[in-house]
Image (tube, rainbow, N blue to C red; front, top):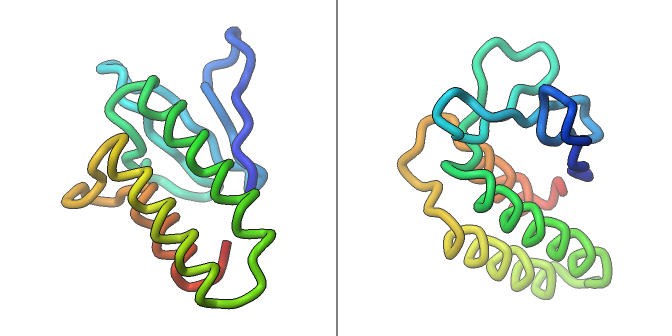
Length: 110
């Protein structure tokens, strides 16, 4: 999955290749709404944190593709999790986007 930032004139700040959209709420919190979902996911509390999180995710995607063994891949997943937690602690948030992405990475789905 790739995350792409939108142009400044869009109502969304980014989208993914699963047709999900990232947007800011009235408080500047980044939320994600996937296709056919009614309730948004919490992503980051600030757009700056979102940009750093996407950078960490993109680095993860590049690194994971080059690893062949499950052990190597789990090391990359752990580094990705640490990078996201260093930007913003997603634990304890209801319906956390990054928590879901980390779980998918741990399961080898992304």
